[in-house]
Image (cartoon, rainbow, N blue to C red; front, side, top):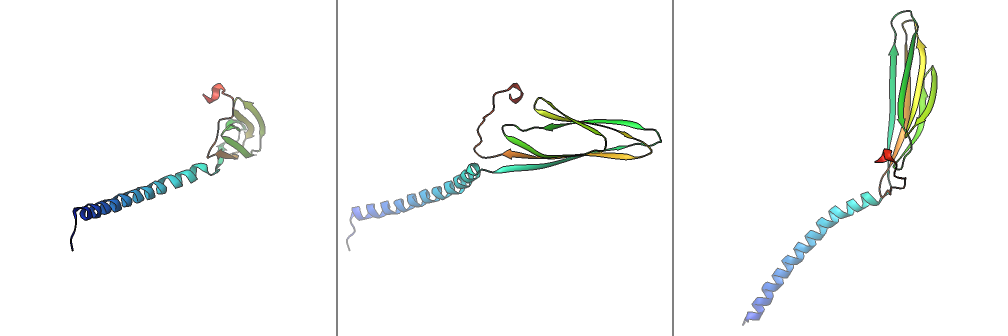
Length: 143
């Protein structure tokens, strides 16, 4: 059998093509393993939800009546979040007011006779994820 120089050249070239093909295939798999999960993560419309519960306990030792006052600042709805399910448990007076982008709860009450009282504030915050666009006006509080 006679082997020409062209046969040797084409055989070595075919081996190199197989190696290059294998490298391209491995690189493609690596790109798919990185890009595909990242694209799915970014493109799916998802929401992250936080449940917040704050508990404030006041104690009094002695027989005198004591005035207790507490103000709690809460977040409000914004371009990237929604606040829902606000619940307040407090036996005294309660006033709500809005100051800028915050909601303020002002609680006041009396304690006496070696007792204790608790104020419990709970709410849910939903954060938008994915391809969110800024739709709000450019207010100084956001800058």
